Length: 169
Image (cartoon, rainbow, N blue to C red; front, side, top):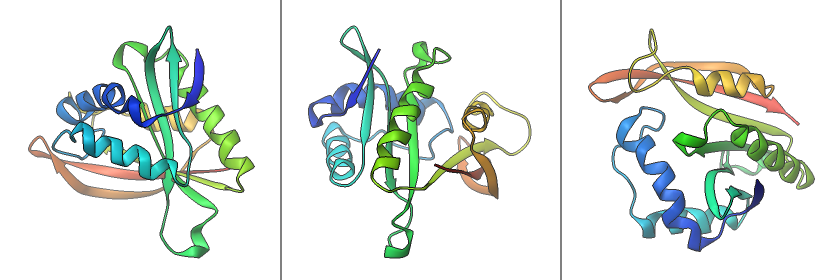
């Protein structure tokens, strides 16, 4: 598996990974799948300042991860928010771990010290749209839970909470 920088031309393939998360899960609180053009713009805007990485095997993108601005004010410039999405068939095969390992190295080289992950979690037990896998994944990689926003989002006719996790690199 190769980890490489995303290209604008990857937008359609990356969107095919992201779309099921929008349609079938509460992992993202986005209701509508973005257009390919909108996704291209997201990639392009991220790459202006931060890494946007793809995991590729046999010419197929298995997942992607990127960093974005944590907060706009200059004092936050050493902190970033991370996002990661892995093709359903490629989950639990080390793709996410490898993406984050490379992403962390690149961010550390650029002077970033604080990583944040904003993660959707079920209000009570896991349901058909959301479980605790993302929280557990981040915990295994050394992220610590630092806050909870209870029932802050609604999707599929039910409320979900959001947690923030952080890691210092």
